[in-house]
Length: 169
Image (cartoon, rainbow, N blue to C red; front, side):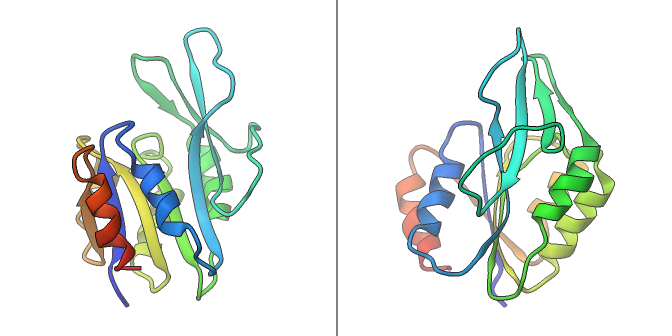
């Protein structure tokens, strides 16, 4: 097994865009999840949802509502991760698992975090994105996992990084 790939970086640097480009033209099934901000913003709040990585349609519901941010600090909803998030992580051999994005909202979702770590111990290829610069136990375990290679993305290296990672998949 090759090492799993983690693309780490700050907000809005191109982590998700890079993953999307890496998946273009691939034929294996895609499992896992993608994180997205909600379409509407309540007064002062932005809601976040996870969606199955291979799904074309993104539905916003209580079931996949993983947290809210208000500019002061995020609030995560562990039950959404522990239930809906774990279902998104069910994968079959021969596929690829996308985890976009691992961050701080799931830090209290013990079952979800354990499932992610279990998958990093496994053989199904993972491409994950992670927020850089946060000292959180769960993220530290992922970023230092022996089966993972971490690539830090910046605006200056993102095009070059595509070429490097394309050859790794």
